[in-house]
Image: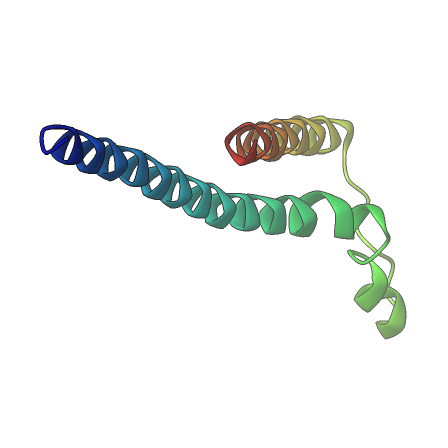
Length: 97
């Protein structure tokens, strides 16, 4: 029985260390997700909702119209940012299980 107690204690320490490591990973992923999601929202969602030209409209000037090349570059950037946000969401979901 006395030999069993140190083995159980060692096992519990390893299990708790693994849980703590999982929580640290989860916390880091959530911080990364918040930053990436904010960047995606600022770059891609807000302009799509008309926020980009709103100040120009209120000033009475015409908003700038993007060229096809600028629009393609913007769409590519948004696609990359969305992939990053989605990947972080999937990692968070996998660790949370």
